[in-house]
Image (cartoon, rainbow, N blue to C red):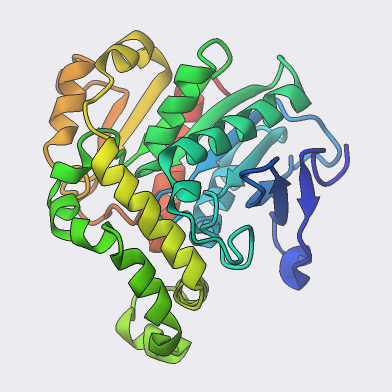
Length: 322
């Protein structure tokens, strides 16, 4: 097989040759349009994967935060036929699919669900029924993963949900304190003034002293893109207003296919963790739920990708996906 599956187009990046993954464009039909993707091919060159991990990020859906985490999973996998597709949210990647787009509905939940389902369908139709597809998701990406499960129940092999924001986001501490930031017309105002408030990378490094340089670069790219800021804030507005009651029947019916990782303290989840655990009747020690280490935060992808990669690898073994 070629370096890219048929549903991806190469995105020219000079540094790609030295990395285990490739930058790509997933060209959805209108109204979605082009979306950023990262592709980790199988270690066994030219082979068809036995397993594809489809990664759905949190908000903002900037894939550049996640390569250390996703590369570590691929490195740990004992199988040479594991591939990974990371697929961004519509409009969240600076310079890709967000030029001149100021329609908040374009970045809302309905469009983003369609975006995720189409990515799943492309993987499944390209590689066929013998290739397993596991959805790996972070934060609100977990809610989108559940919508894919609902839409494609018969062909989703598993879900790994990391720090899942899947119910009543608006009632969590962060949801309550930040809701004003997402409410129109604030996203448009913030986007409009962002060009005059750009912070040089060196100053960002001073503010975020523990962040690796590549993560600083990703953050700087977001702060330099008014439309990407608008997309992320607009989607957040839809999240806090419309991701409400937990779909308990979906979780209970498919709990044998879902694994959960929670932070010890998470102000984007708060007591919704206990609501989920009650819905799946998870007793203490339930193997499919991990209560994480106190030092690993909701934004694990900044500095703790290796630890979460090890956990995902354990789940791959436990679920006999590899």
